[in-house]
Image 1 (cartoon, rainbow, N blue to C red):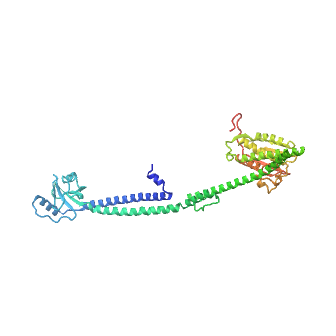
Image 2 (image 1 turned 30 degrees about the horizontal axis):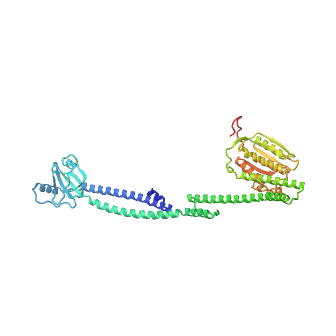
Length: 468
């Protein structure tokens, strides 16, 4: 159903603002004009009443009028200009000049004539249909008589009518001017919104996230512009990171895929040509294929870990024993580096984190230590007061490379020949940060690298209670 409200909502925003301003001004002007008219009307009526009360009818005129009505006088003195004067006795008999129009007698007029009231003031319509303002007071001479003095209401109706037309004209001009001013204000005020709209449409049309809106002032429009600029900057950064991630992932996938393809082609050509590959070479090719498949599986797993929908929200955290998590990770690390000596000093420490993610992070740190430790080396693992340190005796990391170790797909030039995707430490850093902790890599005293993970403690859960 189409109604006025629906049609108003269909208007452009600036038209609605102009209409709102014009309506508000029209209501205000109408209220002021009506108030002015009623106040003026009250003042004019008060003035007329005051004039009637202060009018003293000449005693000779009243005596002549009385005698004229009784038939004892043939002529009347000069009448009062613009006023109607009539006498009223206690029985309601009216006596007035021949050129006057009779006024109706009210109970208040009779009460004044009888001496029950001091005076009476009211409005009435005379015999000719004219509206009159009537003031009745007792006559000083004879008792039982009252004199009514009336003045036509046209004396105030005409000025009030003129005033009403003036106010109506001024109000109309004011409303039209307010509408024009409202339209101008709406256009000026919504200009930043128009710029924002154009910018959004440009982004939607061209996908150009470099668009920025000039920000002026500290009002709501400026805040909206800043928010839009921040949003486009974040989107541009996110898109750049996504493109970089895809490029890096493609680059990392290309190397094992190329090697795997070469090895598979060699095996396929051997089968096609019937030329057998020496057993040792075939064994080396199969080992290479297996290694490349393992590396691909590891890289894909790391990519899936980074692309998890809940990567930004790890879900409900649990109070877990960090020392137990580290002990489990150490068992896996010893299996991967049986030739290494791994020492552990684990003091009890409870943290609030996601168990599986935290275990993967610690396993990644220990795997790095195993991977870079020389054969027969030692790895020292210490957990003390919430800080887990893993120290290896590897070649260490140059100082200029330390700022990059937590970047995705970044690998030290010395480690590019080793298996790995370059995503492990970035996953570790994200998991530790989600648990409210910090991670750092630093050169170890005496050589090697020391990884330090600090996690805030949590209250130890009571025995046999759910750790959530």
